[in-house]
Amino acid sequence: MRDSEEEGVPEPGPVSRLLGSVSNLLTTLLTIGRTRLELLSVELQLEVRRVTTLLVLAFIALFATGVGLLVAGLAIILVFWDTHRVLAALLVTGFFIGIALVAMLVLAHRIRNKPRFLEHTLAELDADSRHVGGG
Image (spheres, rainbow, N blue to C red):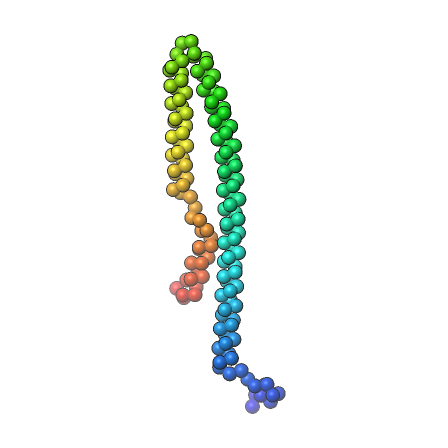
């Protein structure tokens, strides 16, 4: 006889051990899931903060640049008003269109090369999947 049986405490049977193992497995899975959700939450907060900051800075930069370029363009047109006002207006317009085209090309490049959304969370989930699958 074993010590636990001598003290009146029966040893757990295979079913109770199986239930204990399943319970431990579920607890582990819930803990892993919670960790992944916390990581997702942190990444979402960081992404929202990053996008908000970028939008505010972009608005300030665009507004200031637009006003500065408008005033510079008007000044150029006024300087050449008596001699070549049409040419000055066309050159200023072409300059603005050139800036717009460059900005659109840079924007398209940035959109194509942006980091994958929730990159770290997805990497952790892939690692978990490989670990659980044994591969």
